[in-house]
Structures are given as C-alpha cells and as structure tokens.
Image 1 (tube, one colour):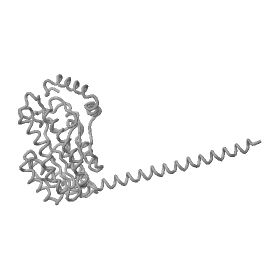
Image 2 (cartoon, helix red, strand yellow; image 1 turned 180 degrees about the horizontal axis):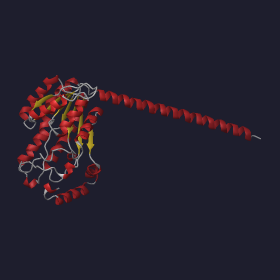
Image 3 (cartoon, helix red, strand yellow; image 1 turned 60 degrees about the vertical axis):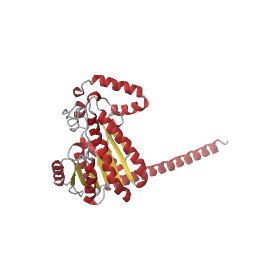
Image 4 (cartoon, helix red, strand yellow; image 1 turned 45 degrees about the vertical axis):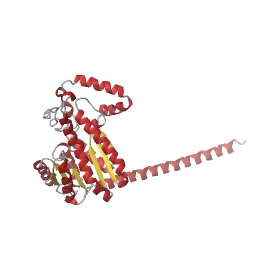
Length: 325
C-alpha cells in the first residue's frame, strides 16, 4: 500500500539529483568559459607587449639571428641588431626597413657591429646599444660558433676560442646590460643554447662544453634576478638548417666547411625563430626544440646514464671520421 508514495519520493530524489548535476555542469562550463577567456586575454596582452619593445639580437646577420630579426620586427619591436660584419648587418637592416608587415607598426632596425669574442669591445658595444633607445627590454644572446673534431686532435686554443664566443661573450654582454634592467625592474634575457647543452655527443667537445656552461649560467641568473622583475629563458634547439656546420671550426682552428646530414635535415630556422618569439611572449623559462630521439636522450642521460654512455661510445666508434657522418 506504500509503493506509490515510495515511487513518488524516488522520483523526487532523482529529479533533485539531476538538478544538482545540471547545476554542477553549468558551473563547470561557466568556469571553463572564464578560464578560456582569461587565457585569451593573457595571450592578447602578451602579444601586445612586444609592440615598441626594444629587442637586441646578437648574431643577427645570418641564420637563426636573421630569422629572429624578421619575426620580432614583424611583431612591432624596435630592433638593435648586432654582429661582427657591419656590411651584412646593414643589408638586414635595409631588407627589414623595406618590408613593412601589414597593419602592425614597425620600425627601421639599428645596427651595432662588434666582435662578441673580444671582451674588450663588449662594454663599449653595450653603451652603444643603450644609447639607441635608452634601455633594453629583451636581449637575445644568439651569436655562436660550432665545432667538429676529436679531442686528441684539438688544440687548447680552439677550446678557448669556442668558449669565448659561445659563453664568455654572451655572459659579458648580459652583465653589461643587466644593471639597466634591474634598475627598471623589467627585462627579458634569452640564451639560445642547444640540446648539446643538456647532453654531450662525440666530436663536439668544445661546443657541448660551451653550451653546458651557458645552461648553468643562465639557470643561476634566472634564480638570482627573478625578484628584480627580470625574466630569463634558455632555448635549446636541436639541429637547425643553417650554415652553422659549414662555419664550424675544427681541431686546428680551420673551417669545417661541410653541411653535414643532420644539419641539412634540421629544423627550418624560421620555425625556431617563431618558437623564440613565443617563448618571450609566454615568458617561458626553459624550452627544448628537438625531436623524439634527442628528447629521449636527455631523459636517458638522467635516468639511465650507463646506457646513455654506452650509446655515445658506440656512436663515437661509428664516427671515426666526423666529416663522414
């Protein structure tokens, strides 16, 4: 005799549960909408932040540096392009000035020529850079040189020269410009490192050593200047399709002169430059731009070093003549 009442109560409870579920779903959807809107607004704000920003790019006359100049110019940045060859820098300046991009306001870049490996010129160059616009918003340490050779055949002077260009030069320029960023409590420093700053492979000792040093220095810097409002990003790409291997030095200091297979099949430098731009916009701390195998090798080096060392020894045996790789 009580069954109809029980059934009615059951229906009420089901309806109440469904109402609660609908309410939770509505709240979840509203929350997701708010989060999506927040992310869109953050992205729009970040993208707008490079308009009129003063961006310094080293190694800007060719390769990845030149591509970075193009994408940051298109983003509306005021560029200071640095490199050793004043004539080639001026060519890049003219190319960019002659090619405004759409409705985005752009500026004719400024060139400051100096040799990053000559520490005596870096302080003067930093003064010249600051005189351009009075401050620096973003410093992209891109300039560098590669190396190919066996350690047994490499003169110690070559090891030092690679370190001067790839490590001491960027460090000197960073430390010359850093005080002005700290005073303004604003700035972003980017170090273009390499996957070889995280793992070392045979016949790249000088290059890998310089990039390991770069990774360590800028990791330390990031921690030390975070409280000062200065951001630090380390970008670690794999092989990039540029002339880096052709211009690499060998054990006796001569040019390698070969576009090796891995470099020829590397990433498009424009894609890497866009990734650098994205890292600056998103204030990323550490970015690895590599395929599955190099990325796996990075984890393998940490989690199973014995296997990693065996694989590298096997690679070294196969590469008895590095130019044949």
